[in-house]
Amino acid sequence: MLASLIYRSQIIENVDKEMIMEVVKNANHRNKKREISGLLFFDAPFFFQVLEGPQESIKALYRKILQDPRHSNVVLLVDETIKARQYPNLGMHFLDIEKIKSIDLSLAEYREKNHLNPANNNFDSKIEKFICQFIEYKYKSNLRHAIANGLKQFSYPVIQEHSNCTAEPPNGYVFAFQSVIDCRQRKTVFVEALARGPDGQGAKEYLSSMSQAEFAHYDMHSTEDAISLAAQLGIEKLSVNFSPNTIFQSIDTVDKLGAMLERYGFNPNQLVVEITESDFIGNHHLAPNIIAKLRASGVELAVDDFGAGYAGLSLLAQFQPDILKIDSGLIGSISSSGPKQSIVRAIHDCADSLAISVVAEGVEHEKDFQYLTSIGISQFQGHLFHTPKLNSYTAHQW
Ligand SMILES: Cc1cc2nc3c(=O)[nH]c(=O)nc-3n(C[C@H](O)[C@H](O)[C@H](O)COP(=O)(O)O)c2cc1C
Image (cartoon, rainbow, N blue to C red):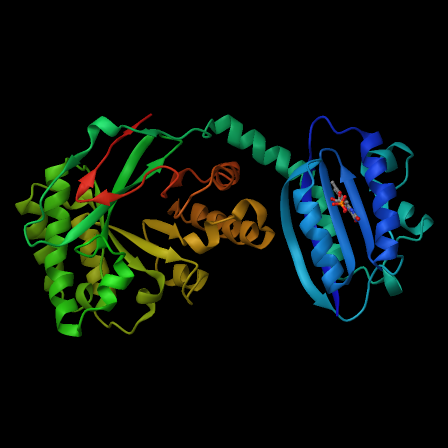
């Protein structure tokens, strides 16, 4: 089976042109032996490579390329099987954009002259679109870095271990607390109460072991525990998760929630209610009224796990929450995934133009954090910043 693979990367500082030419010479020889055809574009400091050939050979080569110390920030853009090669010339063809510009040739003229055009002169293909994008990429990425540097949003806080305090839930339901931080404003925006089983099990495992009746009881009474714990731990703004069956069941829920907040000394604007994307889609006829009443009371609404459900951007056409939490599935390893980068940028742009705050959930790695800040995301949640602990909270030091 034939495969096509495209990635972009960034050259390491001390690698010079001579070294690149050495890579190209060896690669040309090896690719021919393995029946791989390849185009390598270089627009300092970025590489962009198109590889076509037998699937197994392409896979093996990409594993080596990923480990090559002469470049970094390797981002996979396309990895798929193809019917026929678009670039039939085996080997490795190097296109140095700066050099081509300096000899006063357009890229199109250079390709034509050097027989580097696609088969049948098909310039409408996906690969050709990616090539056009790469030509603009340097300009765009310089712009993004300028914006990110201008915002000075690259640092995040450390945990203040000595500030750790622990509390007791009144109904015995256990929670772990995790901050959502804003690196631009350098503050904690709110703290999420994450459901845990009595022995610290994850929410999924614990909640799925309950009967329907047990779950209904849990959903009502555990919220009181989350609020009580937050009050004892000195948390200023709290977010809680609700199942749609509880929150959208009756309009009275909003009054009950308000009374509960008052009992523990909170104002409604100190609460964020999180509902998952897929739960918004359910057929709850009271949902619009309840959402309107919650908002009128001052409670903020967040769509949780956005990108993991089925509604996608069409949900935002019907309803604009205050906060959009992008699902960790789209955030993990974003620094090396072209498709994830494009999707998250689109979600962020869309939310931005609707004045909805965006939180990147499940951030675990420094590289992903750096990428997310470079596209202008400033609110984060994840183990990189905060490991949640049972019934306790540890503040941050900026
Ligand atoms: C930007 C870039 C592109 C590369 N492209 C190829 C290529 O097309 N074919 C190839 O054999 N090696 C290529 N290499 C080199 C490989 O990463 C690796 O060094 C080479 O396959 C030799 O691996 P080995 O010494 O472990 O056999 C490239 C390296 C870089 C930095």
